[in-house]
Length: 164
Image: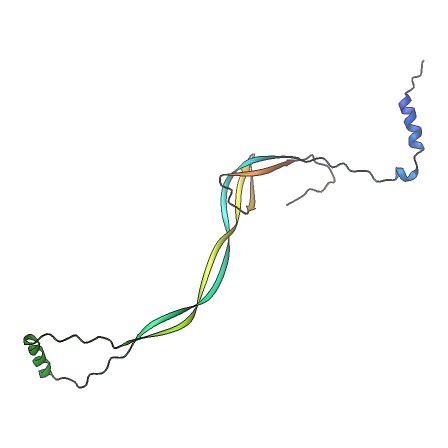
């Protein structure tokens, strides 16, 4: 029987045995797999705007017209004097109509006016990619298609999974 020697193996074992103890106790280096990334498009299902409500108040000048009281008649006319005046009106030019109200004056004051404004600050977007539905809050309305970043990495036991 003939013995076969493997020179590489024989050279490595003595080198490992002669390593200092500090080099053997070093922590293992963890290899992090490279992330595979590509861009793709997802189909948008629904877009709901998220509104911010702003309230503001300011003062404005408001004016109202206040009619002056009508002066009271000097004396109560009798029945006969009204009949005579109406017959006189047929033969004489018609009398000028009396103003229904007296002089008008304005009353102005400053009043607070409250206003409310609603503006969209974000959009909740429902979309589907490869048969799975997702929801994201975006700064702009994406339209019918949403450009997405697709990332694939192998699972490594004991490694934390990043959750958004």
